[in-house]
Length: 261
Image (cartoon, rainbow, N blue to C red; front, side):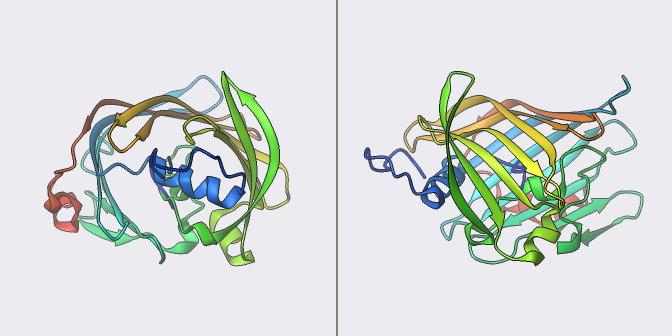
């Protein structure tokens, strides 16, 4: 399950060889590293639309920090409305082992760990899933080049992604996914997930691409919109007040922190 990651989500720095690799796995690996900032603090609006004209708005704060071993930690705290205020999410996104995610519910006054079987479940009632908050291991999936296509004004590689095992497919709730990765900055512009029966399911559009760390050539996707092609529901995450901060305090990425907000 991967954050705003995603998070849900969201990549290797600009030192990548000028001679572009066309190996799909190498492209996806670079894309994953390209949006891993050494530290970030932001506010996010989560907009949930039920496809019938009804809308819910949720406000969150988010902090991320990247560690020398490649582990990325994220904390998400819900600020509004009142029915979700104080809900906290803590994510440890590891490079070579299964990620960890905990959620704190104020009404229960305790945290619980999100298990693998819950990766495909809805994130806080939205069309984003818990798995959208995680990057995951590069080896969880297989990659195949599926041509090129222009999205917006960006020429993109179109890469087909399939789970490496049936277990991974079940956990993520998909049979495959296609991603469009910009040939200019390696940041994704679009993703299309297919359900277990192989039918188009959810379409994700990435926009608001911002260069957050010019020295390292790292970017951030500030807006993600997802649409359920089966039921017409949609959700949008949009970041504001984004601050590049490599010195985000370590104490923020603990269960004790999310439990006292």
